Image (cartoon, rainbow, N blue to C red):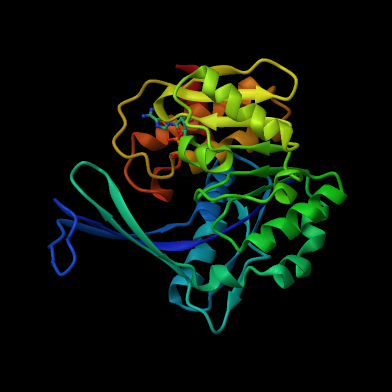
Length: 303
Ligand code: ADP
């Protein structure tokens, strides 16, 4: 059983030809509201890939919050532990996307901020009974630490996708079994800019020395540098596809990877499965709408 603890946002995406400067107003050429948030995206990826997953998260008790909860249920996710918070609005991300597909994002954490240590205590038994716990950094850090401690005590595998990028305490890093930073995040964590395989291994070693057994550095279209403590690391190349939008690529990778790992697939197979899921996601626009279902990943892999 998989438990994901993390954020849910309502993403308001405005496509513009150029970003507005301070004081400027620009007209958008396309607008859409979709469900996002790293926690939710990863939960959706796991759910659609067939994991047995419970999602620990907080929503506002508002229209969007209630809709998000129903939507997550249709994605094969156990939503029983998602709390609807009376006094808070559902988390919001305001996203501008320009014609080069670059983005500028502002986030209001809203109800996500109520995923506090008391919430984690209320749902401790779910964590204790899991095989794996997957988290990201869009939730309060002390909650991430608390959940990792509970998991570790019960020998539940702890996976951290350290996004968005920030520095982390040695105390938290020591509780993690598998970490999945991208190039920006690994630089925050280690101070090492990953420009080639040598630097990738150096950065991975840095995290091994903090107590992390497996380090997966995601390198976009290049693939993933995988390093296990005490062994020589290597690259697992990504699939070559026509990418139109890399939103949620990392989230899809994480949700699919842990799903495959929980099916006892060897790590390289789990990475290839996750590469396939993420490759499909980058050929489609948006966050959750772009995340594939299991049969789509299996078809992709059999071609
Ligand atoms: P993030 O989205 O968190 O920055 P990456 O950009 O490293 O993460 O991408 C995560 C994963 O998504 C990669 O390991 C790969 O599987 C897939 N991916 C990302 N960009 C591409 C691409 N252009 N072509 C194929 N796969 C991609």
